[in-house]
Amino acid sequence: GKKGRPEPGRNGIPNRIFRGRIVESLRDSRNPVRASVVGKRVKPDFRGNDQKWLFQILKGLEKDGLVRLESARKDLVVSLPQ
Image (cartoon, rainbow, N blue to C red; front, side, top):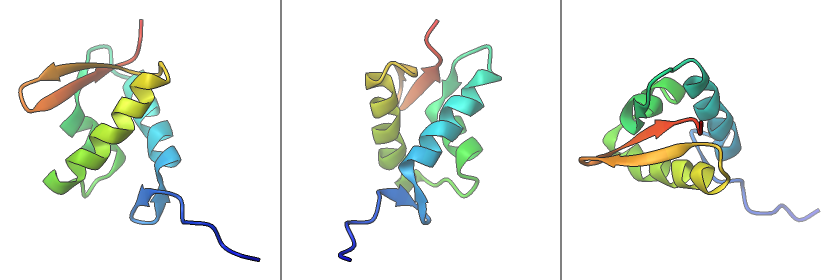
C-alpha cells in the first residue's frame, strides 16, 4: 500500500509521544515550569533550534486545554490548568 506522510516528530519520535511526556512531566510540578526546562525533561538533547518545535507542541496542548501558557521573556511558562 501507499505510505502516508510520516507523522511529525523529532528524532523519529512522533509529536504525540512528546505531548504525553510534557503533560506527564508537569504532573509532578506544583509550580509553573519554563518551556526550556520542559524541553530538556522530555528531550534530553534539547537545543535552541528545538524551541520553535516545542512552542508549537505547547500551543497545541494549550488549544486542547491540556496546559496553560504564560509568556516570560523569550520563553514560555507552562503549567497544568487548575
